[in-house]
Image (cartoon, helix red, strand yellow):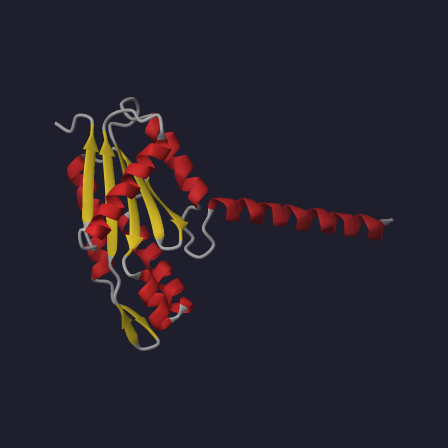
Length: 193
């Protein structure tokens, strides 16, 4: 009976460990350690509702590494993973405690920050862009050049549809790509005085 109890106890602990790991994976991107797509979208939803009340503004940035397919094709997928991990480190280095980043998929990321004035939001996006552009990354003795295009929406008005806010940032991202890459395109909503 004692053996059965021990075996059952071990199985319960293993199930608890696996459940905790599944919950972590649902909230965190396994490669980069940033928020998962679901978790960062939840952040946008929660923060968008408070604009004009608790928060004065909300900045939503969609970021995409430029020419990422070429990097993968030239250096291989392991180099691509290294570039994604390096980009996540750059984001962690530029963002403050109340600013959140998540991986949307592939080489596309989302950043959300409350209470940034327009100028500060643009400055943050530009700092990220420059940090990526000037990053000294080496893979198997070769320098990897990275650049990022960024679509940035800053609103001072309540935004009930977080999905629409993310879609606007995504549209601006593609405009940045079409206008030459390695740039920030900004759109504002509300009163920015």
